[in-house]
Length: 305
Image (cartoon, rainbow, N blue to C red; front, side, top):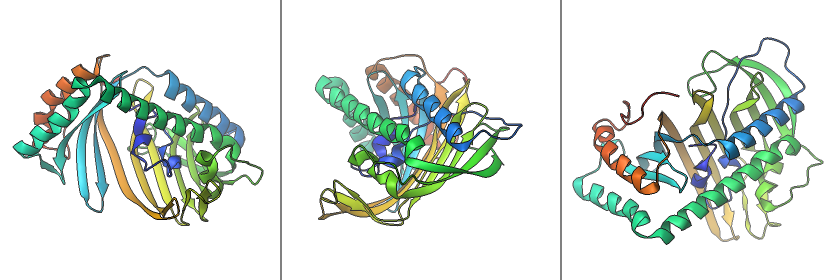
């Protein structure tokens, strides 16, 4: 999913930082540039990739929470991202579950307003993510912390990544409650210096962070997030893993508890298609994936990018 709609998975707009979407590449052979400049270039490239990339993919995603896991297959389209559940806790759907799931996604085709609502939500999620992304260079102070090799799911295998520690910039004044969470975050970025891309962002809340002067709620100290990306072929990148662990309050009364891990894999390029066509492709693919929902390859992609 391009840098990327995932963000739609973070809860209720409060864990907006986790939604930072990416795309990247790597190799370095000399001393890295000044950390702040390295981050500025990488973020500019990420924003460009998120807004300009027209490539579309089909892929598999598994969300795990304390209650269990759900595996879906997805197809990206210009109208919205289509997703179909193929397994719960690693087990294929029973016939009645499959029928209910197909009815759920068919409603987007039968009711254009439902599809428009889905599209608007994805656009809003993406815009919040971009606001967080654009704020990174000014919201933090960066410090060089060495280099490490790219690993499966993080960057492009065979390349090197620059590690940068980050902490809040005391001069940063968040323009809205969306960026407010950054004032309490510290952690590590992994950057592909040669190609100016982000490979990983991992952060922890070292203090409680309020939203809307505390009236709208807060996130508790100790919250943690991890977002990783990998190259999926031909200079295209996608989120491979996202871990979110946050607690807090919304509107001072509603408790927030988020403990999720999303893993995305098996990316295949697909041609441009309508949402309805994507639904049909998912239905054809579902029996193949359901045979082994935790591994294996989907068949409908033509070739790796």
